[in-house]
Amino acid sequence: MSSEGVGGLIMTSPDPPTSLTEELSLRTKATLGFTWRGPLFSGGPDILDYKVSMADSEGNYQVVAENVASYEYMAENLTTGNTY
Image (cartoon, rainbow, N blue to C red; front, side, top):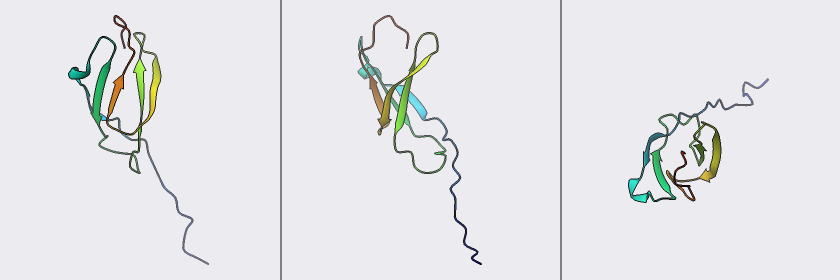
């Protein structure tokens, strides 16, 4: 009888990214640029990419970008006067 198990990997959800900052130099009438740092706790393996969501004025979230492999995102084609 073998004492070797089949193994397993216990993973948990990562903490949210930290230091979310608007890059004011990238702000125009139709764009907003953001940067952030990785979470303090990754939940297990290294984080490879991020999913970026944006809320409308009513608090409804919509994914606007997936597979963002850097710590920055530029929201484009925004409408002046809308709340995001």
